[in-house]
Length: 382
Image (cartoon, rainbow, N blue to C red; front, side, top):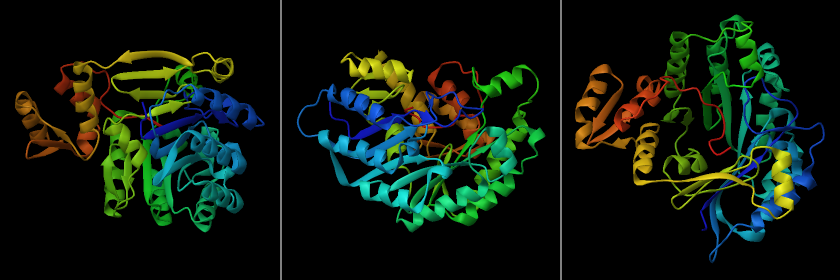
């Protein structure tokens, strides 16, 4: 009942990005007190047994940085009323560059934040406008300087690749600029056309043409070559890190560890049960404050489901998947195709294999998959 990993979903955004299908609440003024009151109510319903110690805390969104200096501190203080955040714990918040100042970053650090995931996406100002982002490339560089100036050196930069060709974005330029800033962690996500997003409507109206699979793959492989060449370890399909700087929180998901999720749309994995909260912020707030359950649904993970997940989770990381005897012929074909390596029965996909992650995992699991190319963006518990 006391998972060592905690995810808190902060849904607020100043505007919705063209590709975003996450649970967000667009607000001109962030209702910090209102949100924390509902979060307090939900957290009080979490059944605990004995001491509760946390190894990671992750505030995702949405845009947690819109809570400001005081709001982030109040959320972490609330967590400490119920659990002990270990002295060595990784405490991450997602932030947009325009929210980061030296003073705010200093307040976050004083509150216990020691890692920031910075939503840069691109350094090209025209591309950022197209995405409906509220910052510039210069803002991103300024934010990184402010975080370092405040003593938060564990910073991850998010970048998006595979943008429509009509934008004339040069992916190589963004990678070069990111590497020059030398953050300890870089995440790259392929642009996905999700239903009910502005991008989806543009594609349906044929005003935007998504990038084809071949240039998509080329950009993914370019990132792998450049970042690996710059000393970053490609440790998960979308993530690169300097030595010792991998995301501990996200790695807990990929290892199958238990975690608790709070806030609208947040997922939890406790024992053999996965559950998820209602998606809409107003509904979540109303239910939480009235003392009702905010859980929208749940599923029991059978042995079969856990086996399928272990295949997928193993293949998506550099730790790999320990193959079964029945997998030998399939895996040998992958080796011949140049998609993976095998050592002591551990199968590890390379960049070319990760482009086919869903299809390869489905092949081992005996299921069908409609996607060959990875294109997910954002927090895995959101």
